[in-house]
Amino acid sequence: EVQLVESGGVVVQPGGSLRLSCAASGFTFDDYDMHWVRQAPGKALEWVSVISWDGDSTYYAESVKGRFTISRDNSKNSLYLQMNSLRGEDTALYYCAKDRNPIAATNYFDSWGQGTLVTVSS
Amino acid sequence: DIQMTQSPSTLSAFVGDRVTISCRASQSISRSLAWYQQKPGKAPKLLIYKASNLESGVPSRFSGSGSGTEFTLTISSLQPDDFATYYCQQYNSYSWTFGQGTKVEIK
Image (cartoon, rainbow over all chains, first blue to last red; front, side):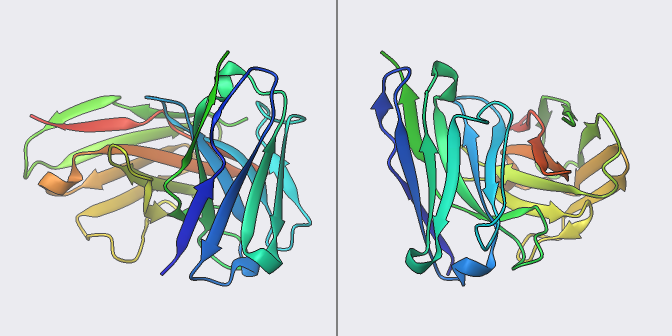
């Protein structure tokens, strides 16, 4: 059974930094592209970032480009999101999500974690 | 970036009704579209991918159609478990976008 477990969400002040983690199990982690998707309270889903299965390619939403960095450690079956220069509008539940297909990504998300809450507030 | 617009934002229906949700892309995305269901306090669940392909384990009352800029999610006979919020999602040129969601409520 695929499991994705996010952690690291806390209350942080504007301008602060935070690192989220996602622990994966139940599938061959290093075969899949992985994404971060966020959801502000009561709002729609917003895609944040993706990293390719081998870690060679990364892409970001314009809203986080230059502030967030996605990375992975395939030896630890773990995905990360380093978040710097945090703003109030970054307050959200952050989900990690897995692409549906190995290697040749479909760009659809077939498994999701339960999310970790990041609150940016003074 | 491609914008995705869903309609309606909220839909009230009876159990047993046929329900249709629309999703419009701001430019053509061929068939690069998925539909997700999200219940309160839960993660989204993939229902349909590549516009019309039913994800494994999803009931056959769910179906998707469309291509280009116009897409539709249909629930043929609404069940109590289907009351939730539904999102469309597109992929194009290293950019992924969700619609704003359609909440399906009990009438």
